[in-house]
Image (cartoon, rainbow, N blue to C red):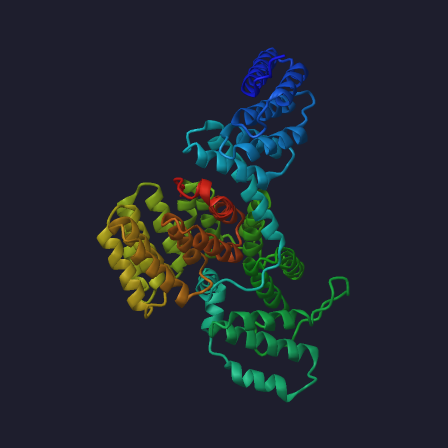
Length: 526
């Protein structure tokens, strides 16, 4: 008998495998998924070259059948895609199918990596990959943000941020402007009597906390407010005895208000809420606590309760400027500009010395298209507060949005001059101008580096640094900068936005590091 031709046998088996595949395709088109699986399995058994790209297609097609069953078998689909991609790691369809199978199994992060890989491999032309990347990225970012918000914060925001927040309360501004003892003599008084009465000790802690707030020693001030609050009886201890304080501000309600505020700013929401609630048990109409609790409700995404606290405050003090300032700010965040304008105009009329109210009014006017009045509002603020770099910076941001680049740059530079180059946001904004106006990425990075140097806790500086790293395709630097930013951010939506960029960069970086021969020369997205 003549010898069998090995080449002929290979060709015959390859052809038989192809025919089995074609039968599988027809079965799939007829929604006979079980029969299609049988045909693709036959194709895999017949295939003479187990590492051939056509075998990758067989596995990929069978994976699609597993996903199409009722109920679907996503684990089997994922396993077949694994085999397919081992043979052909550039097989976009298999990558998408594995991404979908993983997504359906709630393997969200793994699915996102696969969708990203498929998008890169297809040059962002594969609609399934691009849409899947966007869809799953939202899930990944939201999940990361939720996990992050469950973690306790270890530090307060920057002193600039805290000072701006405190300054938005007229009663706090007035309180801190009063003459008072300095930190050193108060510390000495605390050390002189190792066992003073509870009321006297609480008074000293409150007074030193206020002195530390004036000195911008906010971490230490928080410790003192916490120490004062620790001297309060538990809620259920019956009648409450007021402290006897030489400073009328050193009261239990004020201590609870400030303690809650610092916990709130640090992101310890449950503890902050408890402090606010206790304060309102003692004084249900205490305006600063009602407004701070409203802000906390808003951050917890409970708008009805936030608005209810504003209503309670208005019932107690219908002419209090801080109510309109903070509710106007909330309306801006809700994009209810007309309501924001009404409130902010009232706030400025009732408290002409509120920097925040004037800044927010100017920006609301700008967003409503009333450009002349917006600029007039900022000009008036600049005249009234000549020592405020904050006014200059936000005036510059308005001018930048209005395409007045030179005018914006002059305001940012003036803010830096006024602050002896320490106002971080002005550095950041000059960096934005360097990048978009002059296409000078190096100059922009330098400004962001300077912003972080003068204010390491400025989350905006870290976010912009990360964006710049990403735009220059420094993926590793971008991920590192985003990690720093998310460690400082406290608002959920800001965290979601930041994690979206961070996870996109991290996914691309992980692919590049794992398979540089495949992903090293591809076009990356920013």
